[in-house]
Length: 208
Image (cartoon, rainbow, N blue to C red; front, side, top):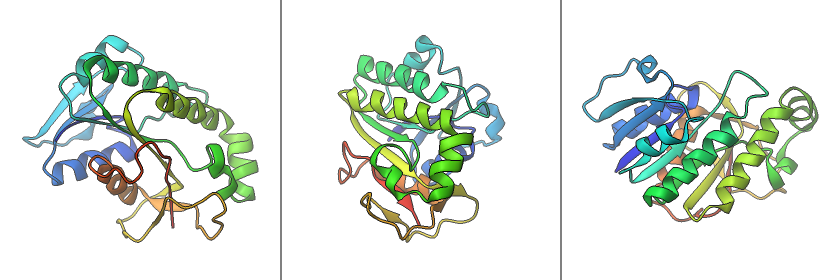
């Protein structure tokens, strides 16, 4: 499958690139400085660009089979997730690329009920409130589209190897969660959604 990964040089994006290449996909890594990946592979193409530029995004998306979005920013008030995703959705609709796998966060929408006091009131209530708001807008953009989308809501990222026995698609009433998950597991799950319709047009949460 010919894939494009937006946010390819981020902590999540790097796992997506590595695992997609291991699975034999043709991968385009889109980022402001994709060379920062420091990865060479015959199936990897580097595409320098800014998701705030809709023309560049549209050119990059053309001809792809699937799109994975893992946008982020060191600036907590940045709107890169929502604005970038809007441009990606527009590009996909323009070029009739249907499959979109978009990573947001546990805590958006009904998954707020899965959070504990720390995440609900201290992190997303105070420190990361603008990040959460941007993710909410991002999800709304995806849901309004006519794409074959899956929105993946992972718990807090951790380092380390994938363990594979994580919980996914749990209800908002689920409380027995660590609220943590390795990035490698999230990348694995996102790539699975490219060819699995179990969660089509749904927002599965991920956590241990």
